[in-house]
Length: 281
Image 1 (cartoon, rainbow, N blue to C red):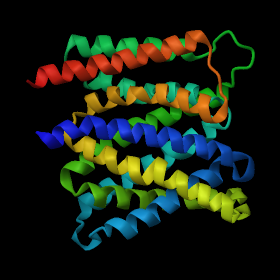
Image 2 (image 1 turned 30 degrees about the vertical axis):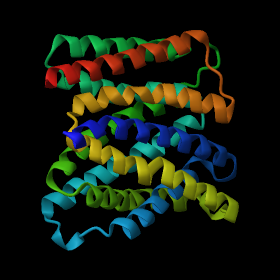
Image 3 (image 1 turned 90 degrees about the vertical axis):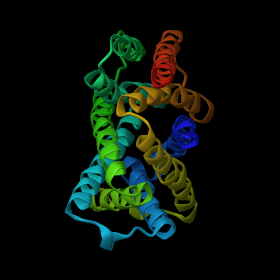
Image 4 (image 1 turned 180 degrees about the horizontal axis):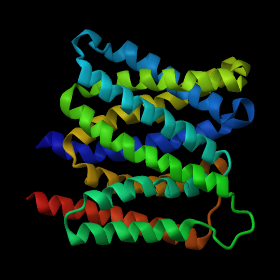
């Protein structure tokens, strides 16, 4: 029971880490770009996790390798596309649009009317945050954020599957290794990563710890204890933390209506979480 109760705090801590790391990452964009930054994040995370967890590769069967590979590809695509999105649009806006992926997943997995109501409220929030009437809307940035959300949904599905058949630490570590193999060709093509200095490397290490190594381990633990639909809606707190992180660290301001939209998403998250607890008793 205690482990189950820790799943929600673990998910919230993972959210805080990810958005803090994203703020640091965005500060690296002028020097090494989105691809260089996500490469530092993923590759350094893979190295750290391998050294710490020492996954038991010899005990893997074909199914475990397959699931870890799909999980890793989703991980790489989600992060690369998301970083390309926040290079063009504010962090809070990107995360809110990205959440469309987990939102649609939650709707697809819902079996009760109240679940659908909470998900629809979150959907209203996502629609409100997009500055539809602005002449400066970066459609490519919005499109990339939405595509990142699709891979976020894949990450949730595969994370849940992998956590059921193998140790969470082994799964996260192996998935990160596969993600590194996926991202390296893009890195070589881009070339910006070769401009890394010691200072950039240390910031990249901070991003790796905050944005990948720590939160993905926490999320894997949570996915093992929470239903995929509950985890998906709980992750809707991401936009609020992203907007606050963008405001504090990047001076990215949102309009009053956009803050209202974030409130809608948070309300949906809290409602789903409380309802989930009630239904489990």
